Image (cartoon, rainbow, N blue to C red; front, side, top):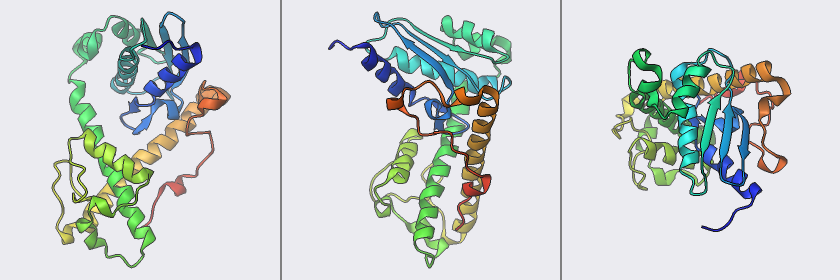
Length: 259
């Protein structure tokens, strides 16, 4: 392994955290401003502090993000000890103790952990796929106002433009085990099953509702984070590591994408 300087290790750690997703909001914790601080030492020790929009955010979501953050940092070949702690949450002590002991979700919350997190994670991965699918299909309708909505069910992946929206859909398809072959249908459920033409309009409305809910929640949580932490809510990245959310206010009306 080649030697890395402090900045390279820091950049590596940030990029690793970029793949940790808030399961409900479907955005990286780095973009949402949930990483309060990141410290990297010369011996490979990493210390990360996370914070959330409120002290009462769901403990299972909080644990999931903190645990995922520790996992991706531990997986880096240069890291030594990795410490991830959640600040200012009503279950901070419980979660931080469990993370330090690598106790897992059930070991951390014991009798309060009624279910395994795998089912919860799968549910939100499916919702993320639905939202990404809707963005791609709505983009088609926006580009061609004469396009028959019922024909969206016949659109194939190779008909989509090579852009970030399409790439996002492909990632979400892979995350739930769906194929990404060029001739695959775009509009499918989580099993890869398509829709008959007469079922497409209702399926699209439901997908849009899912997408608006995710976007709206993310917008709301950003506002809560700024209210709670003020100017510090954007996060500790340097000028060269600017997250995609720069703090610009976006009205809720802008979250809708009319057909």
